[in-house]
Image 1 (cartoon, rainbow over the protein chains, first blue to last red):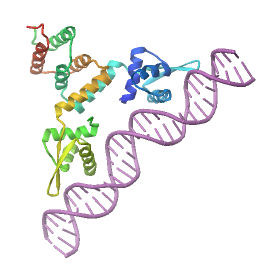
Image 2: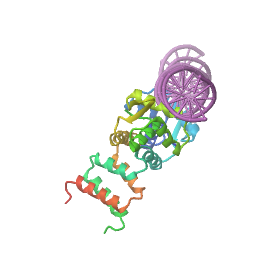
Image 3: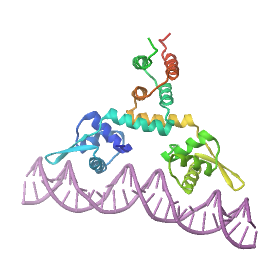
Image 4: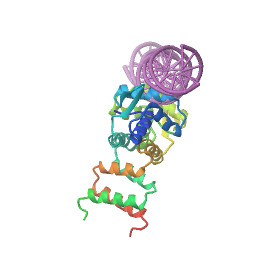
Length: 123
Length: 123
DNA sequence: AAAGATATACGAATTGTTTCGTAGAAGTCA
DNA sequence: TGACTTCTACGAAACAATTCGTATATCTTT
């Protein structure tokens, strides 16, 4: 349930592009860094074994698909990260992330709405 | 400059308690999980080699101290995490972390002030 | 059919991290 | 002093993640 960093990169591609072949995924990954075809292949095979990806055979191709959702996985990773890096304080993380981000007015407005929703005292 | 997970645990102890001996650190770590003394020793030696910890000899003891700051390290890890897990969107991370946290009214108020500060249009 | 391109499978090297056993030095105590 | 405890040093095993070479099967093209 906890993908490694390389696995996460592959998941990102599959989440963004939907079901894909190894070559398609590898092509995407290659844009960011050099990575051999068989390396990607091997990783995706392992992920399939682990149950992270499904695989359907389409002629001689294999088409892979993420079996775990993006938001769900992010939440999982986030929980872990808050624990290990921020000793469990989600608030500290939020403040720090926010303080260093260049948020657009739209984003800030969305955030504002979320806060209003969270705060029962607010009106 | 990017501590591993185990190294981070040791840093947490040093940040929380200040300069410490291996035994002191190991005792802290032992509260959370079983870990041998020499394991902690070895890790701290490696961290010293890497320049993550300073070391002063005090009789036959070695006293270790974190050479990197907590906030600075958290920022670094956070940047990385936003990239790998949230494809660079700090906002998405913030919203998700916030949505799933039980923030106290005080925390929400602090956050509100931060947002007001960030938003130039706000008054 | 033969040559070339492109798939998957898989073993294994490489690299990085964590864990621990053992040895020797240095203190403590009866 | 001798037994005991408690340090540090260090090699190496154990484990995990990543990378890649090579073998073999399957298309495609001429």
